[in-house]
Length: 76
Image 1 (cartoon, helix red, strand yellow):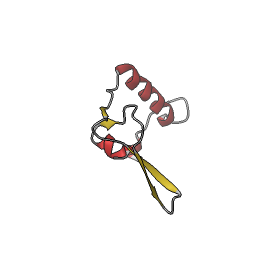
Image 2 (tube, helix red, strand yellow):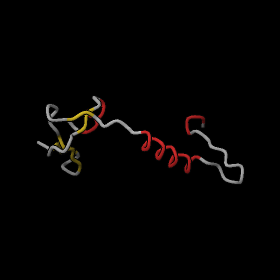
Image 3 (tube, rainbow, N blue to C red):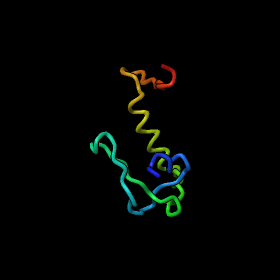
Image 4 (cartoon, rainbow, N blue to C red):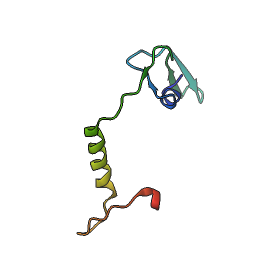
Protein backbone atom coordinates (compact mmCIF):
# COMPACT_ATOMS: atom_id res chain seq x y z
CA UNK A 1 0.00 0.00 0.00
CA UNK A 2 1.00 3.60 -0.45
CA UNK A 3 1.16 6.07 2.45
CA UNK A 4 -2.36 7.41 1.95
CA UNK A 5 -4.20 4.07 2.38
CA UNK A 6 -1.92 3.26 5.31
CA UNK A 7 -2.90 6.58 6.91
CA UNK A 8 -6.61 5.78 6.38
CA UNK A 9 -6.02 2.54 8.30
CA UNK A 10 -4.27 4.59 11.03
CA UNK A 11 -0.91 3.01 10.17
CA UNK A 12 2.49 4.39 9.14
CA UNK A 13 5.43 2.81 7.31
CA UNK A 14 7.39 2.74 10.57
CA UNK A 15 10.92 2.98 9.18
CA UNK A 16 10.60 0.13 6.68
CA UNK A 17 12.05 0.59 3.24
CA UNK A 18 9.64 0.61 0.26
CA UNK A 19 9.21 -2.78 -1.38
CA UNK A 20 8.08 -1.54 -4.79
CA UNK A 21 7.41 1.56 -6.86
CA UNK A 22 4.40 2.21 -9.10
CA UNK A 23 4.99 4.54 -12.06
CA UNK A 24 2.23 6.40 -13.87
CA UNK A 25 1.88 9.26 -16.35
CA UNK A 26 4.51 7.69 -18.61
CA UNK A 27 6.97 7.28 -15.74
CA UNK A 28 6.91 10.95 -14.77
CA UNK A 29 5.08 10.26 -11.48
CA UNK A 30 5.56 7.43 -9.02
CA UNK A 31 4.39 6.14 -5.64
CA UNK A 32 6.25 3.96 -3.16
CA UNK A 33 4.57 0.80 -1.87
CA UNK A 34 4.96 -0.51 1.69
CA UNK A 35 4.12 -3.83 3.35
CA UNK A 36 1.05 -3.77 5.60
CA UNK A 37 2.35 -6.47 7.94
CA UNK A 38 5.41 -4.32 8.79
CA UNK A 39 3.43 -1.10 9.22
CA UNK A 40 3.16 0.37 12.71
CA UNK A 41 0.28 2.23 14.38
CA UNK A 42 0.23 6.00 14.08
CA UNK A 43 1.72 7.91 16.98
CA UNK A 44 -0.75 9.73 19.19
CA UNK A 45 -0.53 13.51 19.38
CA UNK A 46 0.73 14.77 22.72
CA UNK A 47 -0.78 17.78 24.47
CA UNK A 48 2.39 19.79 23.77
CA UNK A 49 2.19 19.02 20.03
CA UNK A 50 -1.51 19.88 19.98
CA UNK A 51 -0.83 23.22 21.69
CA UNK A 52 1.99 24.03 19.25
CA UNK A 53 -0.23 23.16 16.28
CA UNK A 54 -3.05 25.34 17.64
CA UNK A 55 -0.62 28.23 18.12
CA UNK A 56 0.64 27.89 14.53
CA UNK A 57 -2.90 27.68 13.13
CA UNK A 58 -3.95 30.73 15.16
CA UNK A 59 -1.19 32.78 13.60
CA UNK A 60 -2.63 32.19 10.13
CA UNK A 61 -6.24 32.61 11.22
CA UNK A 62 -5.94 35.88 13.12
CA UNK A 63 -7.41 38.91 11.42
CA UNK A 64 -5.58 42.18 10.82
CA UNK A 65 -5.74 45.05 13.24
CA UNK A 66 -5.61 45.41 16.99
CA UNK A 67 -8.80 43.42 17.71
CA UNK A 68 -7.03 40.13 16.89
CA UNK A 69 -10.19 38.21 16.03
CA UNK A 70 -9.71 34.61 14.87
CA UNK A 71 -11.74 33.12 12.06
CA UNK A 72 -12.29 29.50 11.09
CA UNK A 73 -11.78 28.49 7.43
CA UNK A 74 -14.87 26.27 7.76
CA UNK A 75 -17.04 29.33 8.37
CA UNK A 76 -16.07 30.99 5.07
